[in-house]
View (spheres, rainbow, N blue to C red):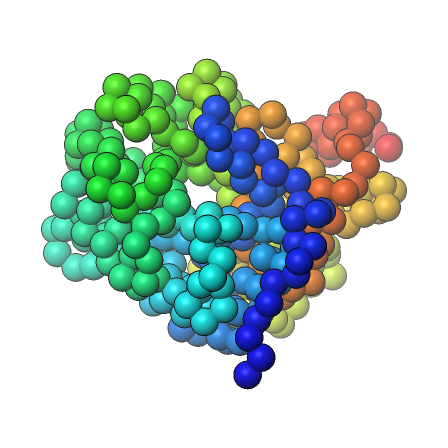
Length: 336
C-alpha cells in the first residue's frame, strides 16, 4: 500500500484567520466529523475525506466524544486515520473534541462536572491515541453544575497538558460572558465558541456575536448549510442517498416545506447570477461576520469539500446582494 503524502502546495490557496486575540490561526473552512465517520461509514471514504481536506489546507478537524454512531466511533476512526496516514504531521493539525452530552450510563456520563469532563477527555485521548488535543470544548451548558466547577475543569485540563486551548459550544450570550470572565481569572482564557449559525438560524446575531467581540473570543460556526438545506440538493426532491433519506435524525423530510423550498430556490438563483453554487453563497454569508473565524462543514464526498473551498475565492458579496438576501429571508418578493 502506498504511503499517503500530502500535497506540497496545500497551504497556497487556503485563507487563515487569527482566532480571537490568540496567536492561533484557523483555516476559514474546517472539517467536522459529526457525520460520516462512525462505524456505519465506509472507512476508505473517511480516510479520503480527511486526506483530501488536508491536501487543500484544512488543518482543523472537529470531533466530540459522542460522535458516531455509536458514540466514540468517530474519534476511533479519526485516530486510525491519523496513525496510519497523518502521524508525521501532528504539529500541522488542530484537533478538537468536546464533552457535554450523554456518553455513558450512570450519574457521571453527562453534564459539566469535573468528574465527567476529565474522564471523558481521558477516554477521547485514548480513542484517538493522542497525548493532547488542541482544543477541548464544553459541549453545552449544564444548569445542574456550578459554572465555576465546569470552568475549573477546563482550566485543570490545560494545566495538565491534555489540551492547549479550551472553548464553549451552544452557550447563550450572558453565560458565555460569565464563563469567559471566570476562565480569564484563572489564567486560561476561552479561545473559541462553537454555535449553530446559518441563513436559517441567526440567533447568534442578537447578542452572542457582540459578547464574543467584547471578550475577544473566536467563533467557529457549525451547520452553516443548515444540514444541507442551503445547497441545491433538495430542489428537485429528496435524493435516495441524502441524509434525509438515509438518516433522518437531524434533518427530516417534514423540514423541507414548500415555503422553505421557495426561499432556497430564490437564494439558489442569486448564487447562479453570481456564477457560483448556493453552498458557496451560504458559506460566504456566514464568513462575512468579522467575529466568525471559520465555518465548520461536514462532507460525505470530496466534491463537497471542493465546493465549500471555492467559497473562499468567490467575489465578495456586495451591499446590494446582502440586501437582496435579507429580502429573500424575510419573504420579500423584490427582484435582483
